[in-house]
Image (cartoon, rainbow, N blue to C red):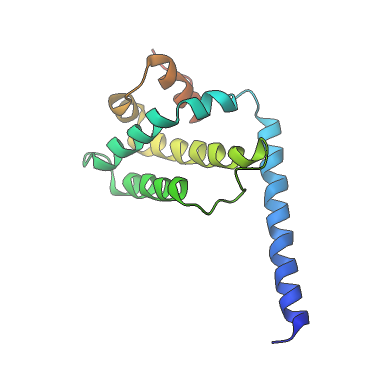
Length: 138
């Protein structure tokens, strides 16, 4: 394999990565009102307990449990789309991926399943539902 081929492949990967970072940055700027980053990070322990409880619940579909399992693996993995040492955007990718998976889980399992397994405060549940693209239903 020649160095031109390797350089072209590395350049292509870096270009795709830069494009993904640009899209992530644009998404975070377009939707700042969804959830503040500090609120999302503060909820992490309760969110991890929620994910563990959803994984253990056999009443939710297998597809939901697979999504939750893949999310847990991603969150625990040392390999990240955007390194966490980068200010703001380093954690933004994690929050956006969690939000996308939560939207999918809520759409499949329902708000009641999330509410049933939520270990935190009602205010925390409201933030999680907002993160999932829903308003908290009283």
